[in-house]
Length: 163
Image (cartoon, rainbow, N blue to C red; front, side):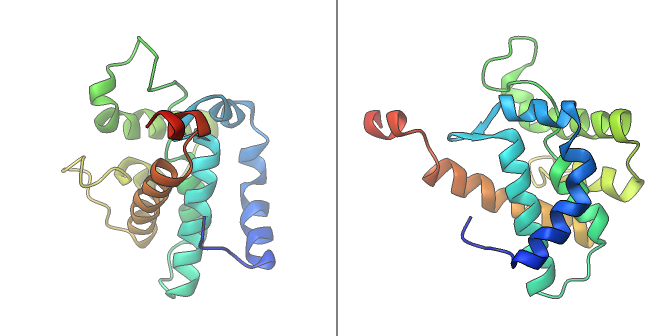
């Protein structure tokens, strides 16, 4: 992503995320493609980095823990939304925030504000799940920014040739 943290900021971010990144369920996110050729785990890391960048550079003052943990776990739904026949793909955008929130609660017992970050990240698609905390707003913005960048610029070479 073009927005980059300093080495000190990256170190702080990944120290906070280390316990989550060591978890096998979180690592499972690396086996699914999110957008373009980017895995779900890499997408979530990008969202965490961009959220932190926005929070620091714009002096927003969001809760750092809710921000980075919510960003990392915002797509913690653990299935391939492109091919998994057990899920209704047209409704994936509407349903996956709640699935990710439930998984975050089940595997990590995350606090309420972090759950809200996860639950609201698809707004405005999920009309009734409006982000109200600073952390939730930042993750929502960062998710849209990263998704667009990944879809437009991080596609597989083969797809670019045939497009």
